Image (cartoon, rainbow, N blue to C red; front, side):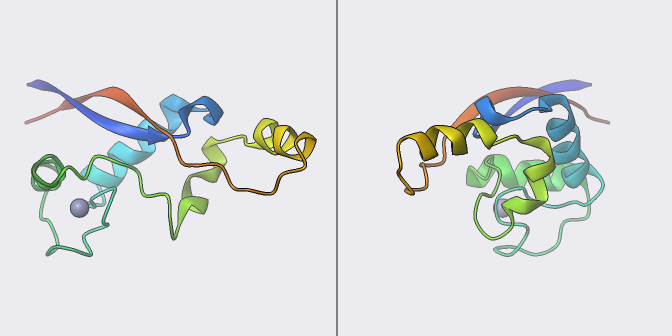
Length: 109
Ligand SMILES: [Zn+2]
């Protein structure tokens, strides 16, 4: 069965490999059995990707974490345009994190 889920990709306009990051996130759920938002820190360990997905939907944990470990995702991004823009503005303020919803299709057994 194929089910549609949504989760939120951070700073999507700077993402250079959307397919790659979606695959990576799905693998994290399916293989790592890990919630993308809280990384199971607010819950017990999950035994399956299904259990993780239920948790994520129940708790609204459908966002990529953006604090304490965004480096993990950096290879999928190119923020140089952003930094150039910021340099031009001579402004060192870190921009707010923006999320964009993407549809994800997941094969369920
Ligand atoms: Zn969670």
